Image (tube, rainbow, N blue to C red; front, side, top):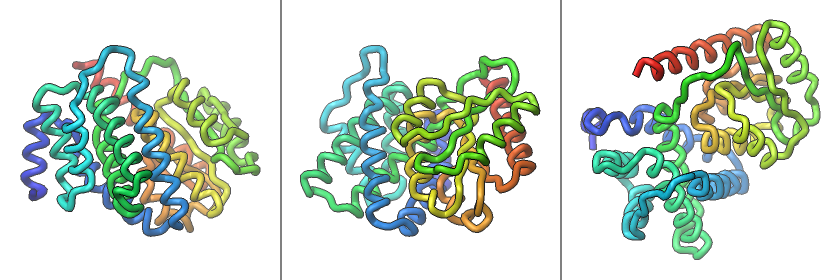
Length: 288
């Protein structure tokens, strides 16, 4: 399917997925997995399967129940040689009347679990499951605009956190003090392990999440954290700031971040831009 055909289909199906975001994310994930050690890529694949697979538990109402054949068909699309197959499958679901929430929390969750089972049973190999989980992430990124919610806060708010395993937290603490002095309400989270940090952020979601890194050694836990936050907090915009950012920028740009900053002044500018973006999105939602 050509890009023109995909774009036309996307418009017809009410922008279920932002195709350009899906395509760019797929490309970036492929490049990122080529840059990382195999054990780290395997950990990321497990993170996707675990996080996406558990999303069904977040649904508070009785959902639509897809058949096993539908989930098999979705997995086939996720593993297809046709890069557009998975996105097209999701758009057809939406066109047929499936609720966006059911697609995100039911279909995607069950497909993730099925991919995990196939991997555990040696029905697909490491390379294949990485392809499928990467496309799951790309679809979720492409669906992110559908999960925007109006801002319900007075004043500028954000979560600042250090990457799990990072012992040097003076930078993020200083940034918190500086932003609070400038009128921001900052919820600071340091010293938490991966699961605890993700769980806390998911329970108290914020429109903007600022992550502090201490150098190249934090790239692996940062990758895992960004993957988890993209799944659990699809409405949040993520900024990364810290040491050696300029040197690591080619790598960081593959993670699907919303902003990257090296200095406090640059972080201030990027945060202001992200807040304006969230405010504009909120105003657009309130107008409907």
